[in-house]
Length: 189
Image 1 (cartoon, helix red, strand yellow):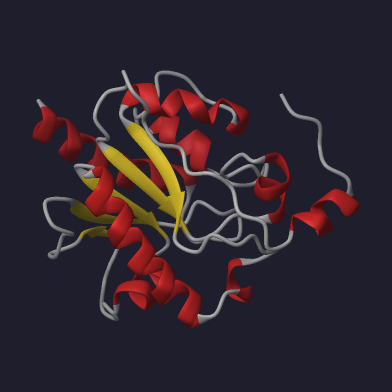
Image 2 (spheres, rainbow, N blue to C red; image 1 turned 45 degrees about the vertical axis):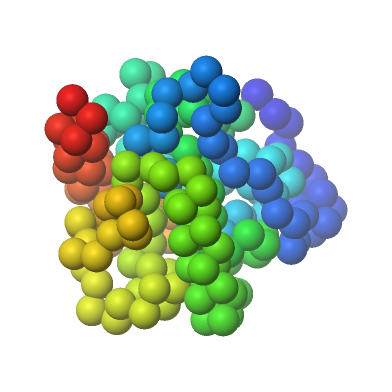
């Protein structure tokens, strides 16, 4: 486990990017590519997605059955062996997602389309309805499976697991993640 970065290290992490978690040679095909909004400062400082302790991504991923045990952010590399990956809509790190511009999200949507075309996941799971609406121009989108996919990739919008998204409980998030898991299993099974 990585030591907690100092305030100075967090400040230096602003605007950094972190690598995507994608399958390598010998890993199973990419079943679900999870897409966060952008890295937070702690994620950028550590290089680990969803690293903030209050973020519920890792617990909900486990609660929904995507992972056999609760993974820590520094174990993110284990996802590739499960056919899972992580990327971000906007690559630059900020203290809060609302520091991003609409233009950055739209540009991120274009980058995401290219990434999906290159890696061909069965599902793209965007965690954050507002970012999805802005990036893809679907102003009326709701959480759940989207009517329009990206080529042969289905799109599912999930609630943002940030601790700031208090109106979604962990159990409700796990249920929605679980709906995607079941759908992705039926497709691959």
